Length: 525
Ligand SMILES: [Zn+2]
Image (cartoon, rainbow, N blue to C red; front, side):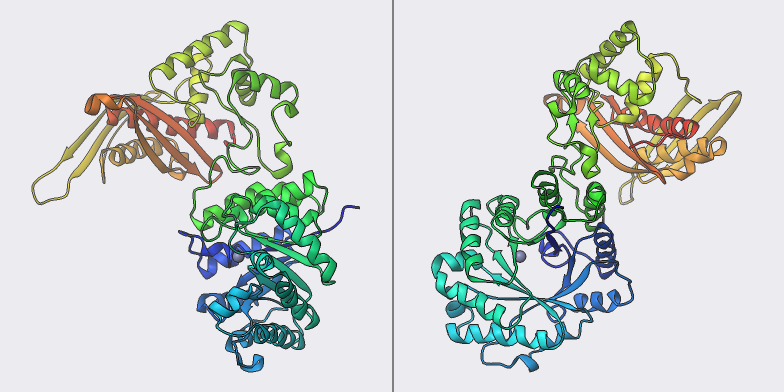
């Protein structure tokens, strides 16, 4: 049986220190609940004394039934010259209503004398007193040795003495922190090996990513004997972030053979990564390893044909192991195999002649500025139309837009749409906060009368890209629209020298696709 590692998530505490990340108490409860289901062993909820929001989190967390994760309250060792039993920060941890405490203290002599302005002996007493106080309160104490690796490099004997003080006082874990994130994997491995010879308490690793090595340092520390792994979902954290659990976990389980999560849970990693990004309101990078949207996207024609024959030719793991999926991108770089694969996805049979017609068609569209990689729904409509197996469920007779701007007043926009559904003629007008919004409203109003499904979709993103910038205002533009309903999202594209026309084209595709999707009850990705 594979050896078990203990996973300690600090997305809610260290992760929320990241620039641009602000989590409400409600957000934190949601993320913690999702992490609990994923099966991490510890969830660091926050620092109850330093932050009233974190105190509130622990109050709310008491009302939740946690499946397996141990909620952990964070804090620091007592003040120099003070007492542990009257230290408000330690009392807040004790009163947080959780059974585990993470306590950080100094291991670098420079920090003790320069930052804390106390003696090396007093720092050892602060560590021992604080750990002992929380242990006496019945808590499991995880001792975080801040700046441990830098401290060890400066004064190994003293750095080790701080760990021994925590261990002797009853800490259940001693966690070695690369707080400044500048260590190299071989240094980490050598120092962890050395610490293991001196400390009997199980060790953990907490790495920051300033040298882009947090994941590598974490793996090296595990290999050298650390059994607790700290990190954050998506590597969130201050400066360059913390060790990214979305990379650490699959490497440990799939490449190194450890057991981190309950069986089957690794396949929820992509979903958890996206869920946390969504709640934190951060756009996840497409090229994020393992869980990124592009992590298993294949574009070049040769790659695609090889991947379809034997996936390991261009994939280091099978995407479903981490809950991600393979994507075949259709573009003019690609050959027939991309298209064949796409057609297969859509359940369409392709003859050689049809295939060639489609390749030529796509190349022509791309020459005119269309790009289907980000517009799956328009691509599907294009394929179906080219194959002659699809008819638009309505015909547009015309669309008119009117924008009026008078001095001292806000501009107003209005759109008029006339369309035919079978023999029925629908004629509507609507206003909007701009011409595209007015067209969306008018088209929606017209179609909703006949197709109620249109009422359940909405536009969620609208992007414009200028294609030939040197032609300034006469340049062609590409408009990309993202739409969403209860079961998923889809993307459409329009291209024209007229931004209104390009937008209209993408809007029409979006609504047509909603109808096509409903008629096949198909779930887009
Ligand atoms: Zn940290």
